[in-house]
Image (cartoon, rainbow, N blue to C red; front, side):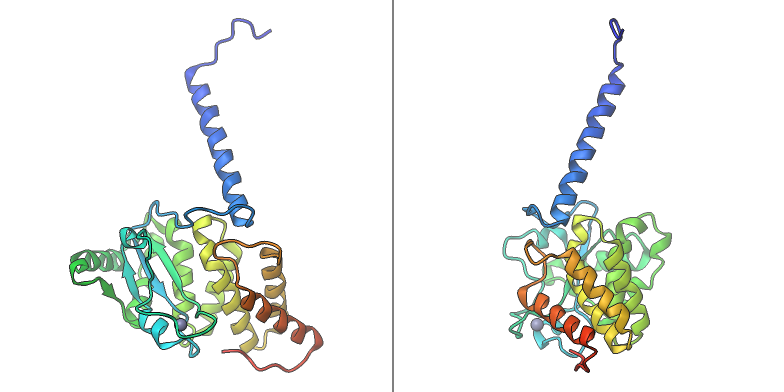
Length: 255
Ligand SMILES: [Zn+2]
């Protein structure tokens, strides 16, 4: 019946692109689920700079706190032994901190990027806590790169507002925990779940804290491991909180 039917070139190309997209999506899903290891978890496409941010909380060691706000070019992050820290973390269980990649097309971000490029020879730049907040308070949503940067901006906002407005941080972490669907966001997930659980407990929102722990356990089953998956200590901490919450025991809120 199809004798003599010739597929136009464009159809062949379209089908080939569709196949590649399906394969790519499948690959991303496998990495997100921890079934395969991404050789390079950093998807640097569309990223022009990275900002390292630790939660604005008391338990962060002095080395990590001193490193918060450092800004890097993708070429620096790509180096083999790159670390965003100025030294070695002082805690036996390393402090939480996240390297957030941004395209940064909005005014404040363009300013930071320009400043970084000009100061590369002097060893790069570091933003103060106020400057980090000013960066994400800019008009990023009106910018063409809003979709690329949305998760990253919410993550920076959540991390940097913990001491100033915990509601902002809860909304930010919740958004990151719910909406991280791309491989490049995988590194935000563990810090977002841990800090969200902590802030909910502090706010007395125990039911939601329990729900967050359940989702964390489903998202990172004990049998699965991968880059940016929780450490054993982090899993144990979540399990301990869960059993305390289930038994209705009073607990000391962790730092
Ligand atoms: Zn540290």
